[in-house]
Length: 400
Picture 1 (cartoon, rainbow, N blue to C red):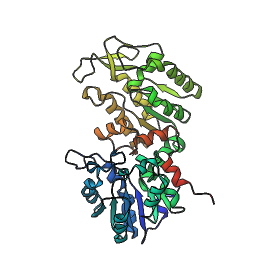
Picture 2 (cartoon, rainbow, N blue to C red; picture 1 turned 90 degrees about the horizontal axis):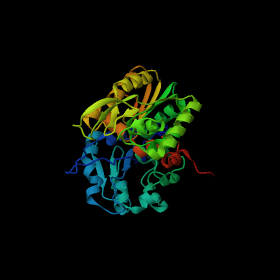
Picture 3 (cartoon, rainbow, N blue to C red; picture 1 turned 180 degrees about the vertical axis):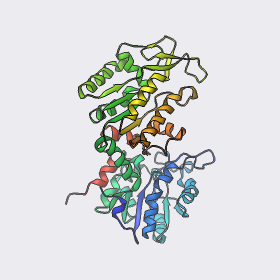
Picture 4 (tube, helix red, strand yellow; picture 1 turned 90 degrees about the vertical axis):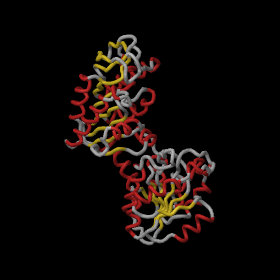
C-alpha cells in the first residue's frame, strides 16, 4: 500500500482529494471543522517537503449546478486558520482560470478548487473530466475516506492518469489500517457492538463479520426483532416482524461459528417516545403492551461491560438506545465508558458509522478510543466486505 510517506514532494504539486464536505451554519460559517483538521497532517507533509498542494473536494449536493450556497469559498477562512497557511481559492475546478492559478502556485502554497459537484461529470465518473483534473498535480493523493465508496471522477477515475504517482494520505491510510485491524489482524477476543434501529440495515455487516469475531453485542432498536424471534414480548417497541426468520438465521450461524451473542436482558421501557415519558425497567423479553424499550437496562449494561472489558479488539457501530433523548442516553454513555476503559487496558477500539460517531462526539469519547472513523457510508461498506472503488484505484496499477 503506497502512502504519502513513500513520496518526496520537493518542487512537486500534490493534487489532494480531501473531504471538506463540512456543515455550514446559517451565516455560512463552518460549524464542525473535524474533517478539515483530519486532512491537516497530509497537507502539511507536502508543504514541509517543499511542495505545493492543490485541494479538491465537494460540498453538499448541488446536483451538477453552480450553487453559491455550496461554494467552497465559504470555508477558506476556516481552512486557512486550521492549516496555519493562507489558502488561495479559484472559483472553478477546471478550465483556464484554474490553469492560470496553478501556474502561479509556488512551493509552500495551497490552492483550493471550487466544488467539484458543480459539474455533473464528477458524480458520473466522467473520464474526460477526471483527465482535466489530473492536469493540476504531479502526484495524486487520495485522503477522502468519506467518499472512497463512490466511483466519482475525482475519487476513482482520476487515479488512472497517475501510474506510479498515486498514494493514500495519512487519514485514508489510517482508516484502512483501522478496518484491517478489526477484520483481519486484531488480537482476540474480538467483539462487535452493533446498535441502531433495524436489523435489515445491518444484516450485511453481521453476515460479513460473524466469521471474524468472538462476541456479538446487539443493542438499540434491532434488539426487539431478535427478542421477538426468540418468542419474547416486545410491547410497542420498534420491531421488524418480517425479519424474524433472518434474526433466527443469524443466531443459528453464530452458534455454528462459536460466536457468543449478547442480547439485552432488561431494558428501560417508556410509555411514550418522549424524553418526559414515564419509564420502568422491564425484562427485555416481557415488555408490556403500551410500553416500548428505548435503552439498555442496568443488568444488560453490566453484562455488556464484562464482555467489552475481556475483549482485545472492539468495533462499535451504532448506539444501544435513543441517546438523542437524555432520559435514554445512559446505555450508550455506559457502553462508551466501557469501550474507553478497554482502550486504556490496551484494547484496539474502532468507532465507525453514523450515529455511534455522533454519540462518541456528543459525550466526549473521541479522544479516548483508538480510532473514530470519518466516513459513514464508506465505513459501513468496508465492514460489509465490499471493495471501495476509491481505495482499489490507488492499489491498482494498469497492466502493461
